Length: 356
Figure (spheres, rainbow, N blue to C red):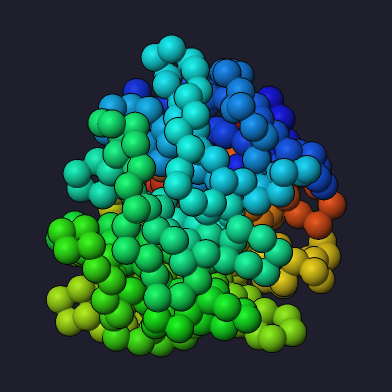
């Protein structure tokens, strides 16, 4: 890429390119710069920068091809309360300020009608919010949705097949699971929240994917601890038909700040992440193994290794089925490199890695 980046976003555009936004290039050096990766030629180019630098934000593709960027963190402003929309056709950004601050570690989920549900987030040091709101791209306007029953951040969210949104895991007040339940479902038709059956384990900083059969896989993250959160290898699956969570096979490696990607063959790729809490990172804290989950067999297997393991990278599925892994950091280095993770060639047991 043009810059080293960690805690940036990478969003697949409607023309098959990938928009990379923000991040940080070194400690307390935040990026407003954006660039676009073109898988046709393997190159990136700079595009118009954000109005404000940020990392830890969200970026969501809108039905009209624009991209909504919400919140994040920088210095000296700290937790951001703004939002911007990128127009690929004109290479411009437009400010679309929400009603509330969502800072970092919120979720932004594209719903079936094209609106975006933004939930919770960290808005101060140790302070999260219960506010929920919806962005309507047709009007470029925000409306308030029913708030959560308690503050929430560091969760994951997935659109269900019936149009509801599952919000799972995360941190409530005092670094414990949220008081309203460790997983809840938002129904946009009734503007209500309903708790699911309890999760098998509490999850913070996990990742999730919706499987082709409509179930949701949540894997990795950290287990809450009043002193030092503990990275986890736990995985579990939510079944909307029964409204229950069941344990899935564990990852072979505990990891958080990783990426999960649903592949065209219905398997799930887990790549990157750290096995130690970030306050104690060393050169050996980062997960090298790339794992593949088969939901039919309920099994993970290692299919390759990263030459340079890292956390806080982005993993984006490309139209040809490859995964573009970009940026990230280890304990001392912020990366500008990117990798294409490809499906195995016939009779080859490991995924192929091609560097750019």
